[in-house]
Image (tube, rainbow, N blue to C red; front, side, top):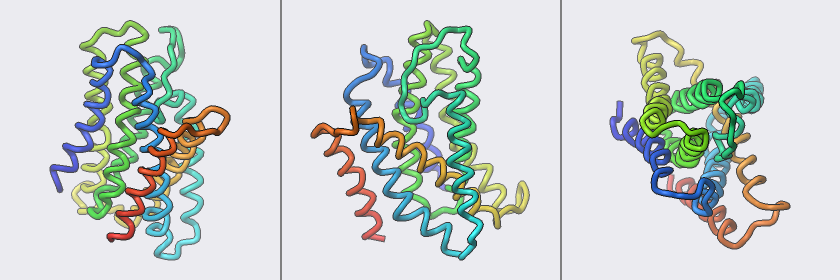
Length: 237
């Protein structure tokens, strides 16, 4: 177990949410740029690293799990309403998804993302998840604040959300070393589900980060920077 990975997963998510108390506006230009960068980075590492790895063993059924992850993310967003990719909506307290549906969806999403990290060589995925959770937790905190939730419950909910990916990491590590069970042969399928989730989130971010599908210069730079960093990691390794 690498403790620094657990710390990075937790802190990126928690600090991303706590940043809401530093900004007066709910939907800032900075958040949009972070979204564009993280969406491009997620998409690039998925194409360059993750997809080739899950197909390496020649299991032709793996595409079913990628598709399943993509569809599963669509289902989750019926409850979270897109907070995973930085959407900020105001809800009424009578809304069916507020706040328990949102929290359940986000926590399950984060837990699944943390599971493949126990393989130990997924640093690109680790940083991708960390980047992705910054705008997601910011959006979560913003929605809670808009609905007049006080500061202390917001912090508690952010802590709950922030520990989900580390818990997924620890759970899958327990599975892989046999202390919980022996599901090591299913890691590629778990990764495939995460790939499907990442494909949905990253493409949604990239398509929705611009008006009428036109990028302004700053967003274009953010997207190119995300792709360039992922490509650099690919060339180095």
